[in-house]
Length: 620
Image (cartoon, rainbow, N blue to C red; front, side, top):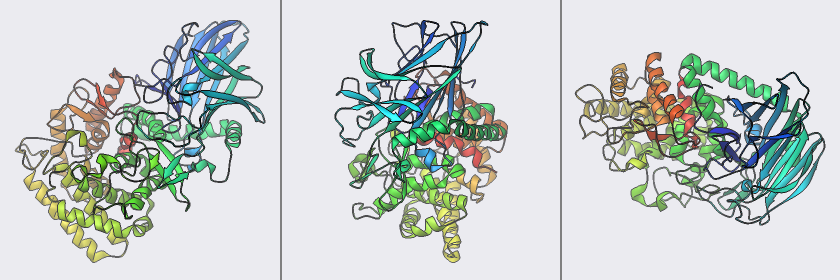
């Protein structure tokens, strides 16, 4: 990867089991929140001890020759003490397979070769510290014990105070359940204090290569309307010990599957975009997967719960699911359905009193009902969330060529479509998904959201045999589009931020569905003029979200780039985003909100919305 990654993924499983670094053996490894989440790795080469992972002031660090990443793996190569050491970190969270998308086991494969022509004896020692099982170091006490698994040497560490699912929050980490460290074959395991942290370790000779495994059993994963739910991987009663053993036995086969997926993704992204675009997708993939948790409710329904990372910690947020959707529409719509099921359950319950769609269903990992803005009416996003839900369901049905998901939720979708008919032509003073920008009346993007939502529901009606109603609704969508084109047009032919603000602009990301669905609601000239305006407004690292500020959003930047007919134009916009990540001084998992003139992060990190970067792949 040519990009200087803003943060390097090492273990990427879910919002809690997460390890990153921006200096692989010069700083402590961290959680995505930037809190220290220390894993420390050493090699002993003929008696000389060198550090290849994490931080320890008392030990010399190995010379890093290269660091590279693909969709599932990060590979670091070191050259020191006469050997070339390769450390390959893999989190095989395959989006195409629900079991692997859930199983909380991540790999580290160590191998070496001599580069000085001599024979060497090489041992590796890996420490997992208490920071992986406590919210913060010394916040409680951890304990450990050896674990018996055939063919492996294993030890686990956990908090001594196991309060399962006892709190929610954003900048917090798990302090229940157990983290497991295993080595294939013979190894010494135990506990120790390192860097003033209680830790467990596994130590083994590397006979050319050695496989280590990291796993986390959170016991219960989610509270869902008062009921504790377990992760999907436990469906058949499997234990964490069985999952670890299974993972060890299938490393080569699973890595081959991951490599095949990664190679195909990179090839397609390069063909439809550029090499830089492909790099951004490979970096985004693990982040998107690891900001979700797959659980199963008491009725056997799959629920794929997102965490709104470094925003407010909301769970199953609709306007986070919306930009995340392209990756799941491409690879596995069942996971996208799992994002929407909690919204449908909540919105059809007596607890939800409004005639529009909710924003969220809780704060991770407590999914008991909306928490955003304490349900105050003035802070809801009625047009935004109604449009999002209808567009997403229509997109799922199109992708599956099966409209049963819409049929199962028809009544509430119809209710929301009527809301869009009533308020979508010229939305009132309300929030949209970019709520950090504040309320805005006559928001052109909200009007576009409503228009595409109505077009989406018209498609649902048609495929459910309601052709007359479909034609009527599509006529309304086209009428609203005509009103938009007339009332939002600037003198230069581009379109405004709001109907009453001549000369302004905004990224019209919601119109992308017209291109993808080929509904032809908007003329080609609309897209051409918008692309011209975006190129004019471009700053060194992107195009501002709108006329009000110089910040932008990564997801919306790629969505509007997808409006371009010219591959050169797409490359122009995508290269600005790539450059932002390449130069960004704030070293955290990919932010989606940054200043287009400086590349400095405004806020947000590790959010699932980076799944939106995949939208270019949805074009034929």
